[in-house]
Amino acid sequence: MFAYCPECGLRYEREQGYFLGAMYISYGLALITIAALSALLWASSSWSIERAIAIASLLFLPLVPLLVTASRVLWIHLDRRLDPGAD
Image (tube, rainbow, N blue to C red; front, side, top):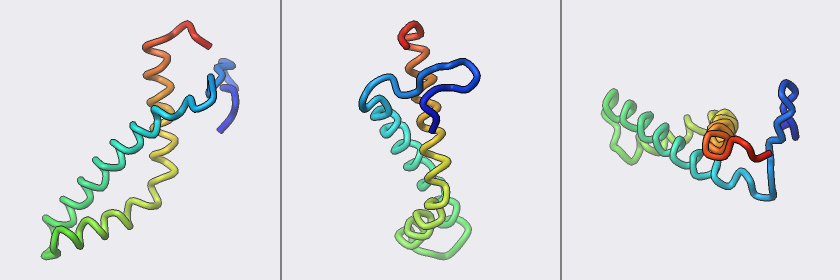
């Protein structure tokens, strides 16, 4: 990830540990994604719920980099909304 936005010059990591809040967003998004995949697999097959969760977790792994990036973007937007003047 760049240190600054190439378009507007916004410094992404304002302080040490800035993206700690993004971890909570990432956790929530991961939970929702795995739950939705599990429900879809369980409803469309005759597998047990445990097996559907295990398979959904494996299917989720390639999505992790995308999820981390999305959670950081959401965190920056939330932070800029709550504290727009701080840089």
